[in-house]
Length: 187
Image 1 (cartoon, helix red, strand yellow):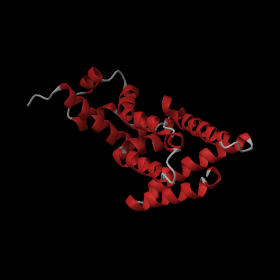
Image 2 (cartoon, rainbow, N blue to C red):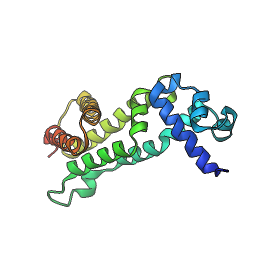
Image 3 (cartoon, rainbow, N blue to C red):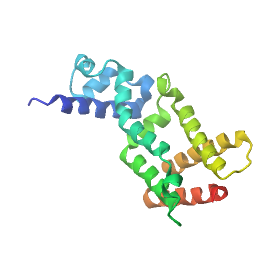
């Protein structure tokens, strides 16, 4: 049976994600990915320039969604709507991203040594820090500059911990409660 090129590409990405979850990027083998996707190693290189290019294509859909989520300005967008549950919306969106991209999320969190994604976490911290700084400055709060990054790191690590240890609706409720506690100062 002849597969369409997009079907083969998706088979390779699916096999690669399994391999990156199982062995992380450094230990993942193109030969194993080829075996899992039932094609030759040479054929993988017709679709992807390198193992890192394959990794990038595996993570790109999640990273695009994550980027849009981080850059959205929920407070500004919903500021005119009194009592709009912004924290709940953010919690739901985080859960959705995690549920839609579980393998990608795992790889991003645990398996990216020796790739250009090593800096992704630091970039994420910077974006969240900048967002917290903007919200705080809009409220004209006098806060030591280091605290913006401390709060950003705390939020990211707390949400990741909750996602990895709680399930379903419980995770959403815990994230909601966490945001309610941590954002008291932004009310």
